[in-house]
Image (cartoon, rainbow, N blue to C red; front, side):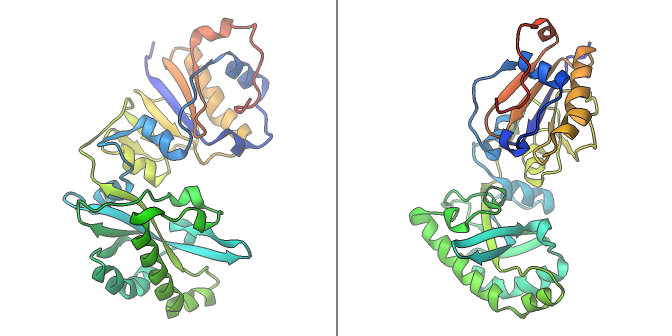
Length: 314
């Protein structure tokens, strides 16, 4: 019998809308153990599985170390290119990073115009990867708690700007950067090509390289750049396979981007439950980004008095 423990990381239950689980999966979910609610949010979900020391959210430093290998000795902040669209109620973040289609041409055109602004502020900017832009900060720099772009996507950006005294300087820098980008002729060229302008930056993921990252998993399978960056110091990290694959050891499969409940059942949940029933894995956990959590075990099949649960949110 394989004693491997597997975790499936899922989005918030509401992301599946009114979709329902089929009978077999609903029966298994109804018989599963429910863990006490965890702290909600994608960031909290990942930190449950990969815990940096000291405990913070150092995605910029971790990604920088992966991209370049020079993160030690400084604090880092992501300043990723984004597209914001004004509307009657404010301005909304509509695209960032790879989804914005940022290429080397964009980086090479826009970054030189931004370097004087951030250089004068003492925060040199560069972009070793076209969609990932970095600010190098003094190690002791005090940073506000910046929101991740995924958290703000589609929402009013003013609700996610850094607040308080530490945030004031960053709001001012952001405003100046927006002016530079708005006036840059390269954005007119992007528009001519039918592409959205890069008209703002998104500050996030600030901090120093952690001393270590601890995890119970020996592997993470994910297509989320932040998850991979966080996990890589602790375990093997690779892209997400197309469907359930039995791991050799304790592993997490990051399905945060899944929205089709039928596909989740057929490609992941039912095959994983079959592996559990056959003893090819020792335990199966489901961790939702809204804080809900379930644990499946082989002996639960005898809990026939429990009603099926057709939605994760019930």
